[in-house]
Image (cartoon, rainbow over the protein chains, first blue to last red):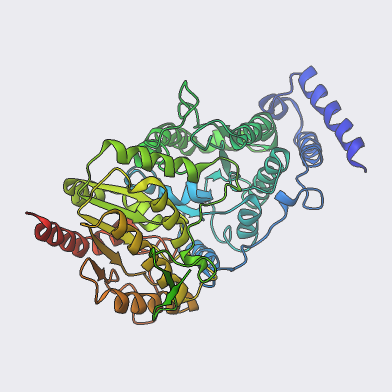
Length: 280
Length: 238
């Protein structure tokens, strides 16, 4: 099947779902299980093609380790440590992504809000969607059954378009859903960056827009945009929020963590019945 | 232009600036904005404008090891009370710090002590070149702030296991230490409290990515640093 025909099928499916008001919950209640599965698989397949989630079409969806050019093997060391942590720990929540995730663990807010939720932090500074995909495919999901995964990645995908980055994120989400079928996924929106308006802000916003509607169609997945409030009325970002106009300060992490923490509590508190009902 | 060759392999001109052909680590170079959000220049400009409004007694300058220090409690506890400014930029190598200091970051301030911590990002440079870069920075600081004392911090080991970068950083430290021994306005402080364990590894509890320090590791390294800065400030006092 060529990409064009898949695009048409996608559009047709979306129309069909909209026309019959077949939102996820209605699909669950009204359709028989096998039919529900087929419909959802079809939507996923269409999304994959439309948003170029397949590695052949989208370099941002191609798993790739970081090559050690500096000479101290730090990336692989971190990956190996995470794989080992999977053998030892039983996290309820898994955070995975780039330095936005990694740095969070160094601030007090992690100890206060997220450690108590039995959270593991698999963030690696500099990672792109390709790197995260590779890590998750190569051991970082083995032997663990987190109930929620928080995914925050994409701002380092400098070689890729917004379309491609969104596709890369979707590919990661698809992998998570297939490896952890009972898991709920929170995707954090990419933050604005740079002191002044610049193309990367537009690109990150475009990625978020692409994800906003497409993510929930994959399953129990939602986009949370924590970037609101960082850009002031004059278009600037303050170094009090991002000390280098990219990475968050302790106080900025605290601001975004409050709503994230609330949401995690909600998702973790859902009863087994509610959880069963939300499964496809 | 006449140049002198010094023992760490650096070429010096009569104006004290490293001859451009000789050492890339000592050639002032701004960071190019390849990503597209101009963050490096934003940081530099902020430091220049910061320096117009403030009167720090201590200036920290360097790479991410300096920059991150500012984000943890240890800064507020140990260094803010010393009236310190932080001009650290993640990713900076010696040539970037050199450019920043030559282009305004020292123009409006007169700190008594400048703490310099840079060199670990000089990938592709030899220890001699990195030492030359550090010496070039020391020279610029001395030209612009003739009464300031520069405290050079030793590069830390990095990587989970033994690797060439640890050797490179150790060599840089040895070269720099030797170079500054004869200079009264400079001193060297070894910042490693023993991060390398008996099996040769570095713990992620000290370096969460085997390069950057955790808050607890910063506590370990900053105590002696704080003491040294205080004693330098005391000496400086009239």
